[in-house]
Length: 195
Length: 253
Image (cartoon, rainbow over all chains, first blue to last red; front, side):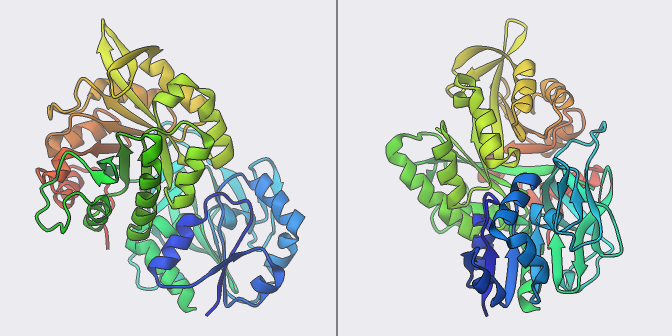
């Protein structure tokens, strides 16, 4: 099986690579269109700022390529946000794979922003959370979140309910960092690789 | 609900844990990778590795260690000690660290916080603040708490947040090593003033000290070293106890 991690200026993808190593999965880090198209699974990571990341995707033509992929694609963190319609972070138009916008968490007493740490997810559906209990804990670090919508497959509560996971056809996404989310995250990655 | 976090801290010298541990089931008592993996399995929410003698020669040992830890654990971990440049941070993140912790170098050159946040994102920039109560004021100290600075702790905490730090690791040198409890009032002040998570450190000696630091102290995470290493407090038991006190904890699979 060929798993590709899409390479762009998305900060630290090392932890994703180590997580795949722990699962014994081989992978290729690349931004080459032919390599990405021929992969069995595509992981689209993301750490950093939305408009910079989107600009880089456009420069490489990846913003056109990613929405046309037919194999299972998993976007994580900012990767997930870039798969939504629009992000409030520097008013960024994103790829629009998921029919939902990304909004900043308002600063409120008792809710520090960024939302940092372990939080539980519920209303689980879809193949990636198979075998996981409701209220499983995963690790988040983010200041922006997609609202809950028809494509939501896991919900998390922080200031407001938001989409912890989304799915539409072959596109999957997680706002949290599955790669460092303990055994729960490991199971989600395993489930993705098994698709 | 967002949980409070329990963080064991491992002091590292020449790639080995120091201060010793009491883990009889450890093949190699000084192996930080093995110890870190055990803590991760026990339900630690994060790990902190502090390189206490980070000289230039030792950086390579540290990088190798970070790589091995990243292979072995599936929870976030922070590396601190002797970090003073973007190049240092880049090397640690590339080796697999999730966050870095800076201390003296941030005091010496506060712009470093801005530079790191811009380059790598706030999420990986932890600013460690060592503080001591001197003549009625909380004063930031460097060099392991030995050297006082001009900085007031509360003002410095707000400054590091404004400069882009993602978290604050607050160590009270007054309570550190005493096992008499965390510096609750100061921790609550810093946590109340900062809109970023505060990891409280220094003074943990009992499970109730963790209850106190999460309630009265308003901390987001509690860090300790020797009480975990010497098994005076067992992490699963601690998390279970905190849960019974109504404090949200991550229960592992």
